[in-house]
Image 1 (cartoon, rainbow, N blue to C red):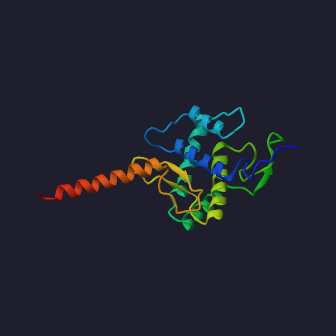
Image 2 (cartoon, helix red, strand yellow):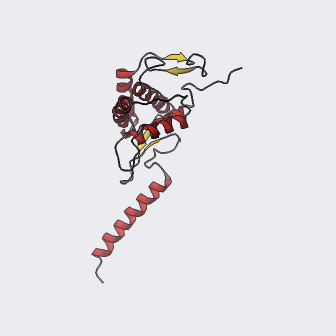
Image 3 (cartoon, rainbow, N blue to C red):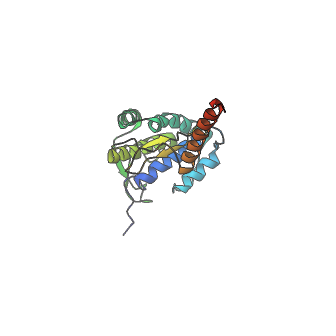
Length: 193
């Protein structure tokens, strides 16, 4: 018996995390890799089958898709995230269909045009589908952008607690320490002995 793959070919959380990792690479910013080789490495990490070929034109289209998808990650509330997801799905998605990529994988849902859809269409539609499922599960924004001024990295909200503000505990701690020091510096400058 063949192994069963979850709905999106991997877990919904993994598909959403793949979106965040690809978004981090594709959006402009300091220290962010920009080439095809780095992008292919991330796709391999998430199990994309070989051969993975990304042309310069594919990369440019993926960057445009990332800019559109960033708006979902930037949404501050579930209503805004849902509106942005619905807009992207309405403009790019096709009716859901099941595929096994000609028997090379387990059955899973796609909402791109076909198994040979352009990379940008696949990235945008599969990411939106995963994020939409997370929003429906949590009734909260499915993702965010790190609030640390020096970071801004995309991340996925998967917990049941409060909406996250930082991509990692390290960024949260760094930001809180910096704010505390700024307050202390402001207080000590105004204090007169």
